[in-house]
Image (cartoon, rainbow, N blue to C red):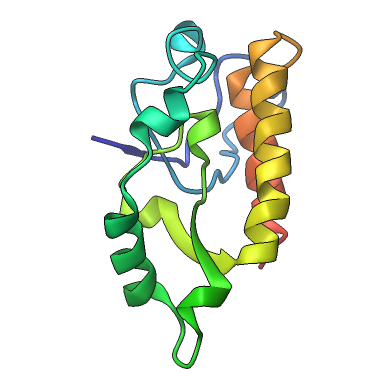
Length: 138
C-alpha cells in the first residue's frame, strides 16, 4: 500500500504550512518514516532490497514511453526515490527519463539520503527538496 503525497508536513520540516500542502511528487512506501530510517533507508543495501526487478520496470517503461522514443535512451526512474522512501512498485511513482537525467538525479538522491542518515536533514525536508528538484525537470 502506498500513499499519494499531497500532505502538509506536520513534523516541523516546513514552517508556515497554514493550510497549504507542499505538492510532493510520487508516492511513498509507508514502511519508511523518520522513526524507521535506521532500519530502512539508512541500512546498507535496503534500497536494493526493495527495488523492483528489471522485468517489471522495463515493461512499465515501454508502456510509458512517448511515441517514437527509444527505450535504450531512457531509464525507468522513481519520482520519489527509494533512497528517500519512495514506493518501489507504484506505477505512479515511476516514469521514464533520459539516462543522463536519471544519473544526475542519482547524485541528488544519494546526497539527500546521506543528509537524512547523518541527521543534518529530516526525511520530510529531504522529500520536499527532491520534489522541488524533480518538478524543475518538467
